Image (spheres, rainbow over the protein chains, first blue to last red):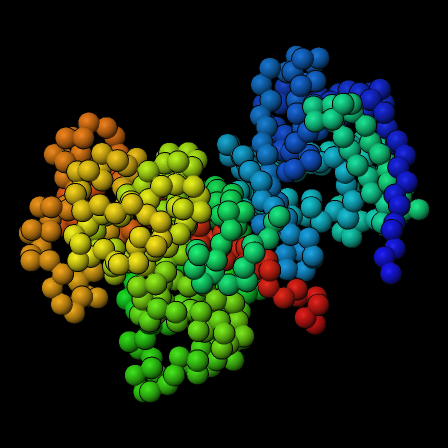
Length: 186
Length: 314
């Protein structure tokens, strides 16, 4: 017998709220990183790149930071679920065209869930060198679902979602508008 | 799909267009890895790979070994000259003994065509064919195509000529399968005695005049004359072969267009290719060697990702 599971979808954040959060996160980065000379913003592939691009756009256009060093990091080869999970990840481009040694790094991702992607990112960065500081910026923190002792330094919103729920972030550069949905099984 | 359609890499004949795309995409990411100060990823730290070479090899063996080490796998090497094969042990027994030491993956080169497939049917392990006699050399064809795509872009409709000792060449057969899967047109060219009779059935153009082949093609893959596989004379003399089929600057200049030049190595300088051509800007021979490591990392990684799930095995 086939059981069809229906997903109920609810809007968690709309475009206006996301815009406010992006401005707040950019200001918090400015407060701690000044003119960004020693700082590198690294987006995690694949979905963290959208958030990275938006924050960089704000820093440049709204807050007058001329030169922000950015990178993209794919954590596929550093994941701890290789040959353990049914899902096979597809490797995407890593672009870190600078030395990480001694730099301040801010990892950027859209949703923080179990923390395993972030752990893989920390391992990956370790293979490039030893930064002075690594921080974490996320738009959504799914609290109470962490598998590892990892917490964000810069946080959009915290939400309560149980296992099986799905949090989906859409950006206007790929869909019609910025929106965060939560999908629950009915 | 993020999965290969095959569980072993026995030949490129078994691969689909999607498999090629997945392998090339993954290899691009590994190429970035091997150009970093720390050229390693930890993905395969819980796997052991045995390289079984029943035939001489320098490049392929080193390339596989580096690829495995850069994926953090444990590696053991075996070559038949130092083994119990000389004491009368069969291939299946040799491999089963190695597997009893808890090896997860076998890379095999063997002088007999079909040996990799034979092993895959008789032992319980993952197999990568690193060359089986005159049959196939899949990773070489993959790295040749990957290097060509880097230089020429999409291979669809491109003209690729394979020159020289086709009849003894697993590189030629694997390249023909791979290039045709990727939409390229293929020509083979050499003395008639070195062109196989089955070539027509593979859907390739056949030519015996090197200049005509050069005029036709965008890229040329120069093969070595495999004297070690010849039990009779296929052409009158090396000097004559070199005069008619050796790639020289004069011949390239006479056709007045740039041609990308590949060679799977080892090169016999002055026989199938002159030093000036082999070291020229249009030759991508060293790119092929670099890409060989990235391609082998991709193949090993993608096959390993399909291996029995660790948590379900326990």
